[in-house]
Image (cartoon, rainbow, N blue to C red; front, side, top):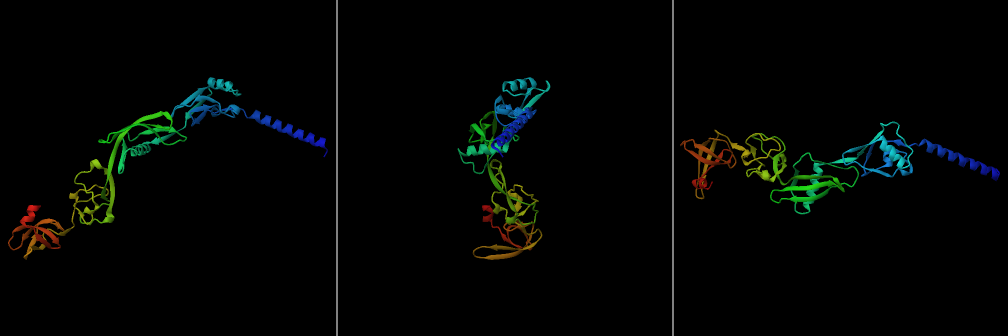
Amino acid sequence: MKTGTMLRHLTALVLLAGLALASASALAQPTLRPAVSVDADVIRLGDLFSDAGPHAADVVAPAPPLGSRTLFDAAWLAATAREHQLDWRPASPFDQASVERATRIVTGDTVARALLAEIAKRQSVAGAQLQLDNAGFRLVAPASPPTGLDIEGLTLDPRSGRFSAMVAAPGDLSSERRVTGVLVRMIKLPVLDRAVAPGEVIAAADLSSLSIRADRVGTDLILDPGELIGKTPRRLIHAEEPLRSADVQAPVIVHKGDLVTIVLETHTMRLTAQGKALSDGGMGSAIRISNTKSNRVIDARVAGPNLVAVITPAQLAAR
């Protein structure tokens, strides 16, 4: 093919490509976006119009506050398009664009964890939980990073555990809210992981733990799992129920009405007699015994199956 002919073909191809691009450009007319969500603090021309061209990145308005929206009417949109050299006109006076700020919800649990971490920079928080006064506390934050919270003005009363602070999404003062609550120390109690009835012996495998506020632990609540193992309930005990010393006892090995051997033993003698139990008793528990010969009622301590040891006056005085 001659050089002149090649040049003519190339020129034609270039012209065709130019016409195609011009046609495509003509077809790509800007279109209004009637509903928009933005995650920045400004609204750009390209947020409101598709195919906004070289001015798409132009800032045209501030974004609405977190959790809210802004309506732009046809007149404002037309004026903005003209100002930024965008070939767009409203189809009717009722054209409008609704712009909302994209957000995420920071839950109260997240806020509590952040505050606890901040308090931990000042003092030990081992075994402590932070409880908000408003259990349904929610913080509206920008949808995009950075995550975390800005915490200002944190105060904590060391005696009551009461605290107060201002929390906000990072760099967004419009989201700032006051939060109050209490820092509470927690303690673990041994509890049953299933219901246990009287007569059943509690084993280590039956136990789990329950965390409760330390200021709600009564003086009679059982804190040591060893005080439960090998014992039996005096009543039906439900799972995860805090237990008191009076709720359990040693398993009954002497029952009311049983004939037992009464033993009186000192360092110089050992006497035995037969008696009748007047009440139930577990190992080591004190019960009343009636001597079957003299009918005398005495105090004795269960020493084994059908075996009781007399409680001496000195032992009674020491009780």
